[in-house]
Image 1 (cartoon, rainbow, N blue to C red):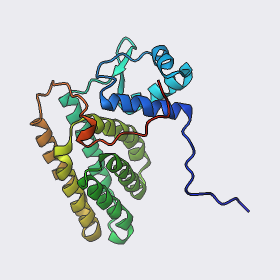
Image 2 (cartoon, rainbow, N blue to C red):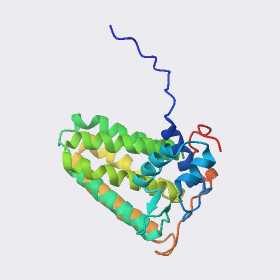
Image 3 (cartoon, one colour):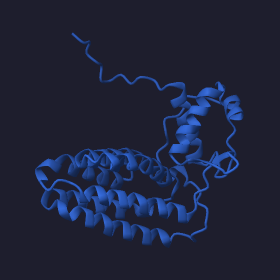
Image 4 (cartoon, rainbow, N blue to C red):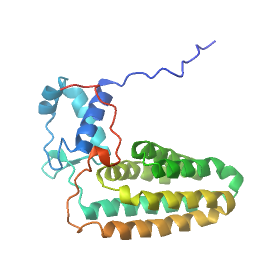
Length: 241
């Protein structure tokens, strides 16, 4: 008989995961400012770890869009411009609409997805941005599971990582209501008329992009918002400098 798993036990992160959390926290807090060079040896020395977990962590943060690789192969903290943020949201919206468009038409099979949409919207409405990010990822995972489209899932994974990274960097408290209402409407559509969901998403993305376009000039660089402005801090203390 297999041993019973204690559900209250959380395994500690690996050293690589701990370094990823620390560097992610420093980028999102602005301690590592946009454009700051990323040098593995310097980070390893500062954090008191070997260079291997730093390299692993940098690769993870590149996939999340928080670190970028320049043409000369140097790396730096991502410099997110207004135009890039809008383009990422546009591509994310295209993939979401494509997913909702390909859902089965039976509302009874979509109750789990409707619940996930509602949970995301309600969590965001409560101002819990950190938890809302996790709820958003769960919602997208359930959407892709329902669609069962292998190529769409493979395309969505990197876009989702980069888009969530952009959302984390983008001062977006003023967009919460727009996101929340849209996915409450999607949840209702899924339980009544699933065919409406994709058009709701398209309308939402159009409104989102129009609102974002008014935030700042297209070439403006975006700085992370202060932690008190809605972004809950990551778990801290796994790696100490």
